[in-house]
Image (cartoon, rainbow, N blue to C red):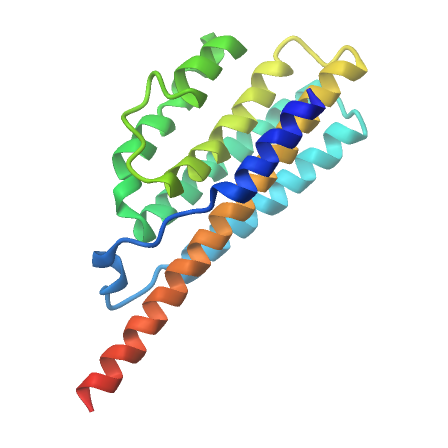
Length: 194
């Protein structure tokens, strides 16, 4: 399990993200304040959930926090769409996950959403990281559905949250790249208009 996590985290670091869409770079306003606030709130909630998993808090608390994190992930996706509109249809499909979580097993979640069998084609690699902000807390929710009986279950939930936090950092960096591209475009527009 740890080897798989290491491989995934290394892949995330190397995976990178694409550039913001040209049409959004030309936009007059950037969604930076909303995007930054949503991702920072997500990171804070994820950190709190990870802490509670590590100290082996009660399963009901972990479930509540995981559900709150899924909700916050949805807000991040909405804000992220402003910078990367090519992700809209993909994220819309991901956001339906909350409605079906109660009846899903880990395998169904993995095959349907992580592997993408229930999702449209990935339009841009940057969309992948956003999707994972909802999937990893969803996996935690399913893991703790029957309680947190032993150290192995807590470890599995912990690894999911570590991975969610790595994806959150990738999303944050993608938002920063978008903001930088908008700023560069504004400077270029100013220099050509003078």
